[in-house]
Length: 116
Length: 110
Image 1 (cartoon, rainbow over the protein chains, first blue to last red):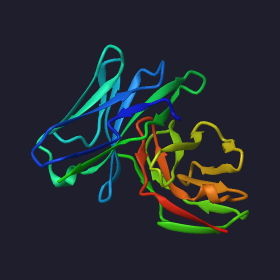
Image 2: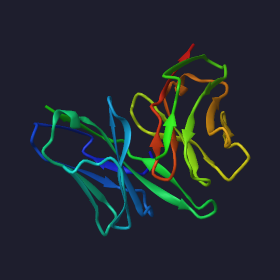
Image 3: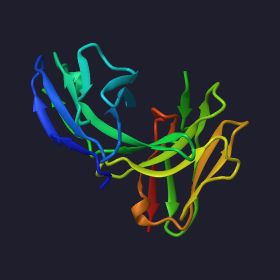
């Protein structure tokens, strides 16, 4: 158990709909990351938040948005869903290693999204 | 932009034997971090090992070790005394936000 909690674990929805994926980071971790794993695109970094502020953006579609709340949990909102959005969405959080000045990222179990 | 290449889509190893998974990367940065993650059939992403680029010593975690060649931009993972539980997809990843390779499926034969 990595300590990163994601809900829901599975979700089936129709095209055109909107869903929200929720993530609670490990205790004490300020950074939250979202990744998408699909068959055709592999594992892709979507977006990072640090202590409530957007820190970095990857290959995130304009139909997708995220936020991190004051209690550090994060939500990924996916709207106008298309069949191609079907994927495993991971949330991850990181601890900053002062000794090496780097992050180690720990993943949640993922949320399976199926768009039909 | 950084890229990570895993040239072996699939590898097989006999139980108790040693296997090496390859990874190369491209970056213009001098200080960075490299990781290997394991993804078993449960699809959970599990950190296997981490290497800081400024460290010349190769990282080791029990049966897992890396061969880090900074000049060649190579970062291979060696698994010794392979066990059935090692069967999984292995991803090489670069940097603080993680740029992933395509992955290598490792099969372990009993």
